[in-house]
Each structure stands twice: as structure tokens, then as C-alpha cells.
Image 1 (spheres, helix red, strand yellow):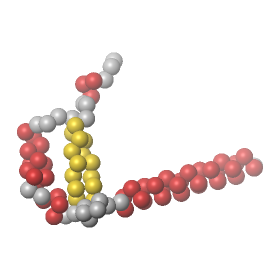
Image 2: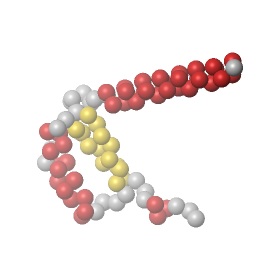
Image 3: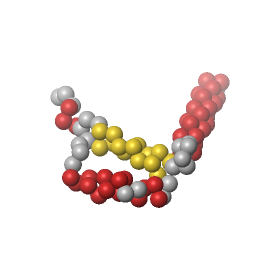
Length: 80
């Protein structure tokens, strides 16, 4: 019975800490008042042209969003 109570208490503590971390992550804003959003893309492509244009023309900034584009490796690098 004691082991069950300790397990439940540990799970609750982990849940509360995780909630606090996530709440702070969503609440952080940049100094310029914009919320930073990281966008990962697997390749630079013409298909993303509307996204690039919207970033360049400041459409996201009009809504308080600062976009950070990151190029990440795609699924082709997986070892089988």
C-alpha cells in the first residue's frame, strides 16, 4: 500500500513539474513582443514559396509571430 502511495505521489509531482515547464515555454516571448515559433523543413523547395513570401513580407509579424526556419535531415538518412 505504501509503495502505491509513493508511486502516485511521484507521478503527480512529475505531472506538476512537466505542466509548469510547458506553461513557461508557451508564455515566453521575445524582447520585441513576438512569440518565437521554430519551423523545421526537410528541404528548401519551391513548394514552400508562399511560406517564404509570408515571412519576407512580415505577415507573421503582424500576428505577433517570429518564425525561425530550420533545415533538418529527412527520412532518407535512416539506416535499415
